[in-house]
Length: 484
Length: 92
Image (cartoon, rainbow over all chains, first blue to last red):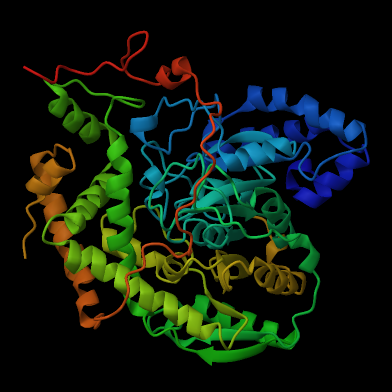
């Protein structure tokens, strides 16, 4: 067996039994990267020298018999999380040469647990997009079909996990950016509850929606990573003071009697037939495991995309004001300060980022604030209330993750609105702040992965893990690997 | 409705090419038309949600702690002196 195929728990077992060394595992990962990366293009930065330097300490910990859960485990990080001394670009020209002087809380916690940073993965510039086509540098390819996109914005992380270029990865999710690429790449993607994981050191896009989460080969690996990255952080005032359970403890618990809501608004006319069939089959599978499907309604679903694009772009226009060519990042020449600002931002940002900054500036501008921004915040309340009402009668909600399987590069690139609609099933989860996980639930006739989304109550990731694990263990979708 | 992209871009400190102005103007108009569907909903008396957690005024003790060193903070600046960021002339 090739070591790069391992998941976290199997790698842990072999490392602890001294059957393999940390160096051998890293060797295997980089051999795999050398073999497939020119096709997949998952990484912005491959941190090879740094990775080998990181290897000694966890190997010593393992040799001493006191290994931690991630001692020696090679992990990829989306390139919008700051890694001290390692270039962090957000896949934007404006941060092309940015070397963070500090470490994000999530990577610092992974470090304390002995992880090995394999590299920084490609994304849509500033996490704005659903395909990685908005990256300021290149488009990542879907390992299942290289003509297709991996989804986005965490497309690099999802593709790297699917192509076995790392054992696991972190992503971030503002409107579906972990779950949609996980679905399109046939891996497991978790967006935790808003506030569950610190965002300190995550480059901000839309602060009331952004959340860091995991992209892994299976459900258990997600639980293992969540045990480490979750919890209150004094550096992020929006991280919640809520106790963190051992998420692996619920794996294997039976799901008999759990009520699973099936929202009728998520099974719409025009949705891909193969996606619908796979998701309906998955619901039957959950029923055969003892869960009770209940039809529910989330009546404001149809307004989620519009609400999201007002709120996310408004917040983005404010967050991205900091890129002014003064403190860090790219600077263009200009005859005076104003001219320098205008040119720096014109040359540093790509088209989608500019589009969103303009839309957000418009919706926040004098005279339009009430009509757009405030209105969207009010509709957000209605969407959030839909979920609160639903969770009075069900334990979790099951939907497709994305309306279609992976689309071809270029297919939606010229039509921003069509691209926005590919997040139609994931966006409400961010607006409500609840957790959601995407797990593989089938393949199309073109052999493209299909994802099942499970949505839970605030801070109830445990139910997601329990249901996702029960489903995963009774199916074999997660064991399939792309032929690359 | 027609959005004056030029004015908005100036507010956002973005200079746009003629081509961008035309493209963004068309695209933004179609996005705004789509977003207009929010006005179908009656939101009178609905509280706006700015944040999904009920966290307010998170404070810490006012005690000094380590921060990034000046040299580190300046290390990514496009232009700086020993102690300061340097920018193009502001006052004539």
